[in-house]
Image 1 (cartoon, one colour):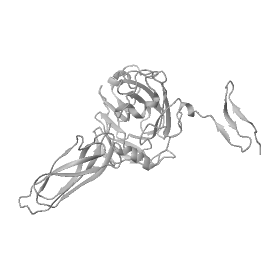
Image 2 (cartoon, one colour):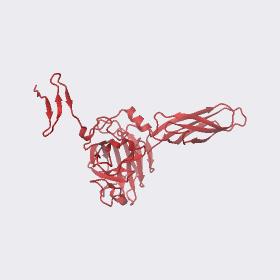
Image 3 (spheres, one colour):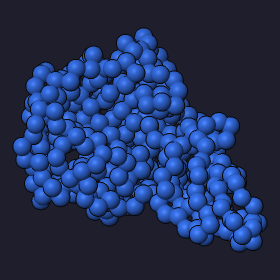
Image 4 (cartoon, helix red, strand yellow):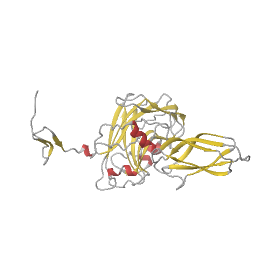
Length: 368
């Protein structure tokens, strides 16, 4: 066996050792900067980048825009195409899930204003370490895995929402296999990212871009004022031009620095808790056994995780006795906030003896 015995390892021209060896016990001290990213954990700004969490369940064919199936990834559809969005076990090695966008209605004639974008919108308070808008601004490293039936050029855009600035890069999908792509975006000393719980930075994957978005000069070498015609490449493919087209995505990562590091895998429980800040399906249950009439207050429902802001509530189903009707729920503080809802029901009981019950199922959302 060969050995190298040294006291330290130092770079040519460096003034301090990168690795210092303890000659007594053989341990070492390393000066690690992690390629410009000072932290080895919690690097990834993307929530649910491994696509494990799908609280809403699979989405059948639809032309609607919204958070369809996969948590935290918005399908922003401004075209005539329709897609089914599902959780898939077709993955690259090392991943348990991906999200599949299956074109079910093609849009082969793209109008000038048509677009189809998959987005993750990020709270400003989560991206302050990029130091955007300061003299210490850092670069943005983006990496992801794509498998697509439609080969060709795709545009991946970073959008500074409050300052209306953007920078776009392209990838070329040359085969229909899983491939990892890495992109490095320049630092931007103009326009600080708002420090709060609003949408401050958006990562956008373009699948369709009409001429309103790709007829100019791609804003790729530096950040600039968001100009519609400069957002997508003039070579951008139409990934929705055939019902044979599928688009798979997983392993999405955004981190500080000049190098895209290996994907940071979080546990299922960690990802679920992060997603519940924005979406929580739950059951609201209320039962009243007196014959009283008038407005009756329902219970406060506490969320598993405090939500980003006071959420909205979408009803999935309800059941009730015939003498009960739902009146309203209050979404203004202090009756509702990021921690729970206070519901109000009304009961009509002319006999003053009937028991009543009311159950309401639904989903609370506080998306960006």
